[in-house]
Length: 153
Image (cartoon, rainbow, N blue to C red; front, side):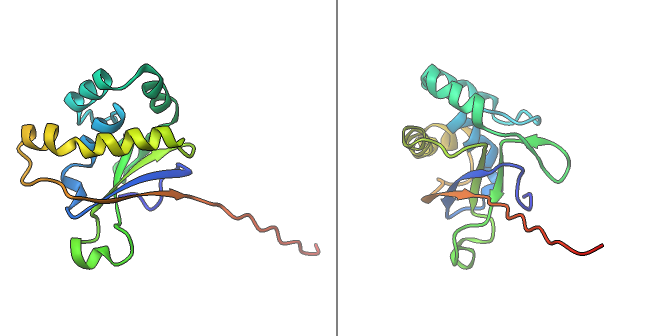
């Protein structure tokens, strides 16, 4: 997990499971975007087959690849769950997808719908240990405050 990626927006999928087992697969399934590591090629192909050209273009234009702690550029990372969730589900039970702008409502709907089909199509075919339980979705915006201090020289 990066401290905070160089992306102004995060679309976060909260789950009851350790997200490190599936964050790249889920992101590829939702967006059709892969990181440099190439994990999720089958999921990317399925997303491209299912998503309209307009939605694919939005993802291509606005999903951001950010370096992880090893310098590998990825569109996603594990993320901390909502406040209080770490006690129930562990510290990294969420998946953050990096975006350069706030997604429109139509894109958010597609992202939620695609996330909802992940268990049926991916978890079973990849034989992941269990069904992923999605508990919610969040949008997080990074804000930077610049404060200028003047001093006499």
